[in-house]
Image 1 (cartoon, rainbow, N blue to C red):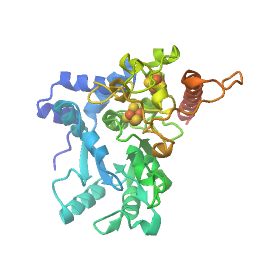
Image 2: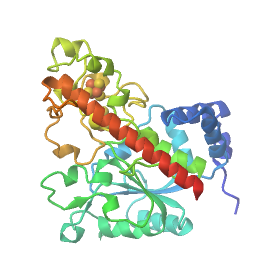
Image 3: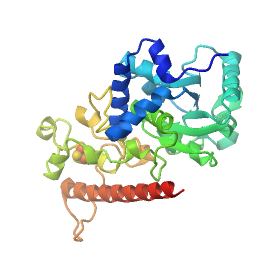
Image 4: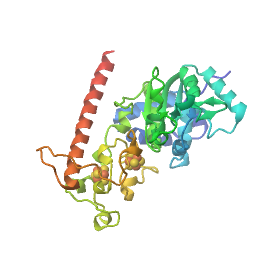
Length: 358
Ligand code: SF4
Ligand code: SF4
């Protein structure tokens, strides 16, 4: 049997130029804010890496995460992404069905024991022995446990798989939970979002392939390369926020002038994600740029947090006065956000030192 090809060899065979490949890796590296040296290392390492076996399971969800993953902004990018990985099983995308699909999955597991990445999309219902979500006669709970056993790592994609998401929204009728509430003995990376940014999913896989290790994670297991800053930290409307210029409704003069959306419910100050930098649709725009506040979709329990169009409650300011209006509320929320960011950076630095000393 011939030796499996490297990604570089395969791309060459398919007529993808080195220039196109470098452009793509530079784009991914910049989405992670890697240094130029790391970007170069990423390109070199990816070219010589073998394709990563990925098994993608769908549980209690809407398939929006698969949709997001495959809706890349150009066919070239999409092709390149699929050249990095061998998507050995994905119920939504695969063209075989029934027994043949299950057999393909069994074979992929057997051939890649301990080496495959398990991607989990959707929450797991626990009530009534998990009967609310089944596939091929097995509950999602049983399927997850079986496929997690031989995985190298698990990537939980979307807010349902990470934190329970919409299925777990009150009153949570099926007892839905995120993947890390069930699997506790495997490395887990959470990539929340409803849906998650496609580059955050592909970039994380590319990072693992390039550097042979998982990226640094925050306290919610989210990669810091994509979730290290709040939306508010990088929002282009921030200067308006700093000057206390807020839209009061979606059709007032402030909204037309592009002022800060804090008072119409933007959750950017307490939401960690890369929307303000990586953006959506190939970097064209993101919700705030289109005039809608952030809903906080990459944070736990975002659906139940008290209303998408209600501003974060006005807190007490640092000198002990109750501050009227959103300007003050925003300032304190910003301070909280900055404090959390500082704590996260400190934690990440500590982890790095620990890692280097191991
Ligand atoms: S509150 Fe929202 S719109 Fe205003 S600066 Fe922060 S993230 Fe941007
Ligand atoms: S802007 Fe906020 S609600 Fe919108 S996708 Fe990004 S994190 Fe989710």
